[in-house]
Image (tube, rainbow, N blue to C red):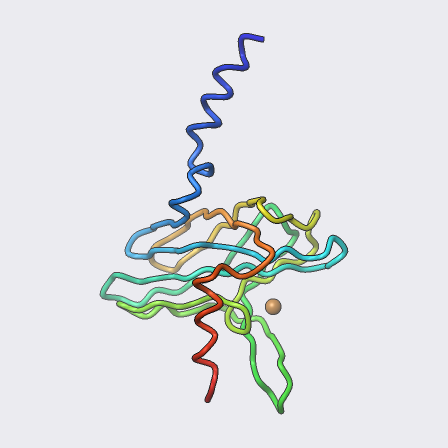
Length: 160
Ligand SMILES: [Cu+2]
């Protein structure tokens, strides 16, 4: 029984419980609010979104993603082709110097295949991002039923 107290303290100190600071830094890059939409339990895939800011003077490149939550994770983009929305895998995503790239519904996203099980609202799971220059960083994906308010407002830049 005496083990219980130290374990509880360790859990309280775990960074994953600090909900307010859900952002990450690696090198000159800053990753904000990684999240995923809750999917039906039978859905075969899920997508993850976040924003990457590059404070540095050189462009970087997101090369790959991985998570123990899914057998496979890929970088995807959405395309309008002949009036049909399609998505396809991309080999990397450029993060311009001094700029930012939004991974968001209908744009770039992380696609996860063969999930062990679908995550539910309020749960979190780890995702490792590998950048060409900044290296690797593990972030936690927060699962929500709906897009965070800050994300849904940004759907306006859609007209071409
Ligand atoms: Cu996709």
